[in-house]
Length: 390
Image (cartoon, rainbow, N blue to C red; front, side):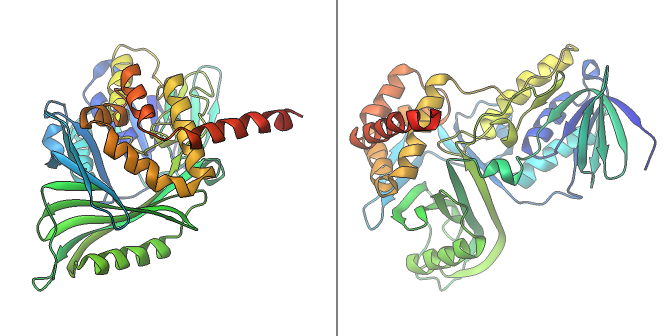
């Protein structure tokens, strides 16, 4: 094991959150000496990050595709299409993001990226932290922990968002083509014994798209099952695949209990493990970017890092109730999403999904949904509370 090395800041995890913070600190003298500890040995195109935004944001150059319209539908029903003026649904390839971040980090004398290193334990000493990795002992004044949550904590989620997707190019003889003008956000909505299922299609051209099958389920759904469901989707739509560029999959926590944002003085949590994903949707890219910008500004001034901020109590309540309805009354899920797509105007929907909703926007969303499932879930929780206390 190498001799102990001292840093001002250690970032545990070099995924989206860790790299987002590191590239903003690159070349910033006020942040001091920074190290990013990441278990993987290299970066590959393994993710697709999407969000609603105007064309005025710092990472617009990384957006390789955008759509002004999106669609949703229940199983065997006509699609509902929505839009919001001045805002588009934007796609960032993880490989483009990784390259952008790594270029910034490698050009900075104050940032050190340690690939192939796993943080094994973190200890608080009198005036610093000591982090033991598989090859070294590192010391730092502050620690930002962006590592994903452990499997035991993931099991505490109200629901799991599980998906398998492939970037495919269609064969010349394919009987059907993609429609490149609009995203299929939640089409083919239906419920079965495994939970809610829907299709998610990002069409890059008439013959190329990212096609995913997604499920919201109480327990994680196996990758092999989702892959088989994706095969069935491609066949059902008449999309005959000529080439598959890559495959991506994940299990995202929905309604993960909020962690302690600062378990030890000077150590904060961020990323998925810090609550970066929106509980009711799984979107997190923009939330991570806002946190990284605020945290980097603090560190640049020599101040302690910021944890991923908690959602407002209103949003926590609304998202938590919605997820409990989906978990306890799964047969209602396709109808609830369809009603939201039908009755919520595009601009309100975008603000609600992007954490920009005010009270009036939240009321519009609430009023679009049938009240009975939510009242039943609230009543059940009130009845159960005395038993839990006892």
